[in-house]
Length: 205
Image (cartoon, rainbow, N blue to C red; front, side, top):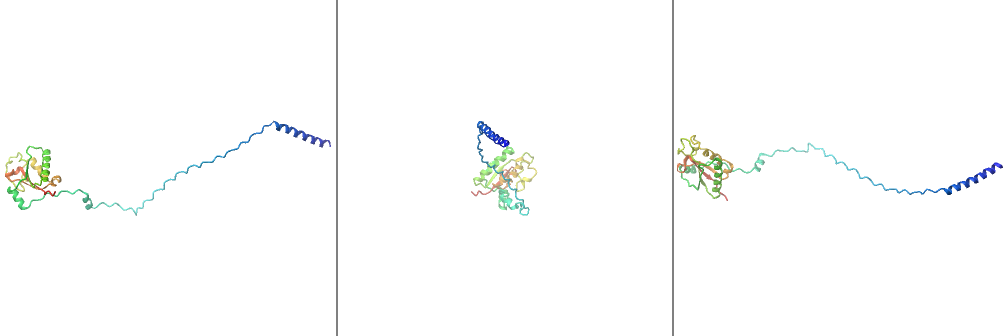
């Protein structure tokens, strides 16, 4: 009986002690945790798709343009110098020709002579002239006063004047052929071996 009473009394003492302890303890305040919304990360950029494989069978080889197409894109060249008809050639050979204008290149350097000739030819053509006379001089050869003339006179070896050699070359250039249709050494009455008759193309304007 004594044991049972002791157990009951001890329990009351423990309860009283626990009550006193709980009165001295300050309770801890509970905090509410806020759940932050998770911001989604931007998606990774997609790699560009690989280029389609070249289909060799569908690729057509580049064909070179035909010669006719290339010539069509090239600027038109003036016509070549022509030979005079028999009647005109005879008139020139006999000196029976009406000269519309004259150019004397005596004493000119080759560079200056070419510029003067181009200006003279283009101006004469613009005025509608047909036959002009270009005087070059006969040079310093011992046969400089020779009076031979004709279609082949300027090929004779005694005619060695520089300008006289250059005039046929210049008249054969495209820049001159735009205005000139032909030329021939002059008759002695117009300078002989030191001059040329130059025939101009018709001015269509």
